[in-house]
Amino acid sequence: MEIRQVTTVDGVLAAGALFDDPVRPDWATRFLDSPGHHLLVAYVDGTPVGMVTGVEMTHPDKGTELFLYELGVADGYQRRGIGGALVAALADLARERGLYGMWVVADGDNVPALATYRSAGGEASPNEVVFTWTFP
Image (tube, rainbow, N blue to C red; front, side, top):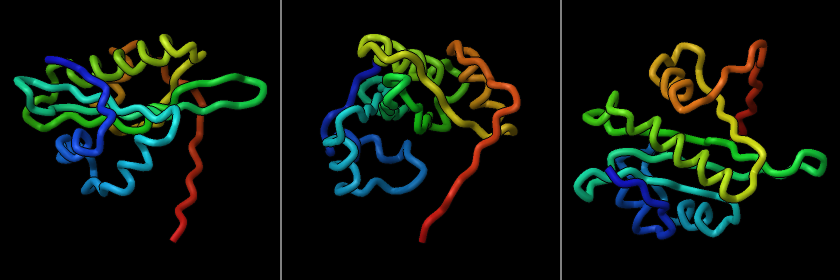
């Protein structure tokens, strides 16, 4: 397995099956053109089998941290350590860039995701609540 940072729309489109929804080239372009947006893809024999995205967030009194936005591994490649390797690679990228931390939100009943994040060194924050807004 090899993990590489993807920096082209064609690279994003080639990994499109790993995303929840179809990749739109205009959105992929905007993502890639935005400073602090990162996409890492895991390849096995040249085939994309996993991806993770991260977005840098800076606050005036805290500095910059990385939000792990999405993690996806192809069905036939799950439970092989690919997700954990992607999360670890994203954490390494954050450290290399001098960020002070990384965080992710996961559904409490998503057992595979919780196990992956724990195996990659993440710690669950007790008593955290996530609020969401959806706009039409």
